[in-house]
Length: 167
Image (cartoon, rainbow, N blue to C red; front, top):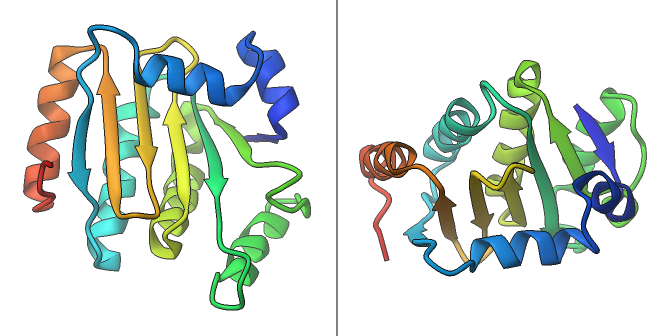
């Protein structure tokens, strides 16, 4: 797992900024974007994080950018920063919000995506080869664009098993 700031991530992705890379691909012509209601229960959120790791990060590198987090006392940032400092990084989210995960980092991916879901933060999950783009919203929605019909069908069936309603 590699943690970096947006400038470092943009340089590695070969783009002007991570936001433009993500939004241009999420909204590219011909892409079918699916929106689902996120589960509210922690157990189903954890299962969702595990499923996303299995589908998107088990064979190829994937990236995650936390784009919105709460700064209030109820934000659980002490738990999040405790996790990060235990991994050797004490930077704040505003200084380093982009993660690159290798297939060997699936457990770290699950932990971070689970916290994003538990705390109702915003995050983007994507790969630099533009095969998938996932937008997790604090408004309890998840938008998905995948390049493969097989991945799309797997995603829809797994979300149905988690009782996630398509919108």
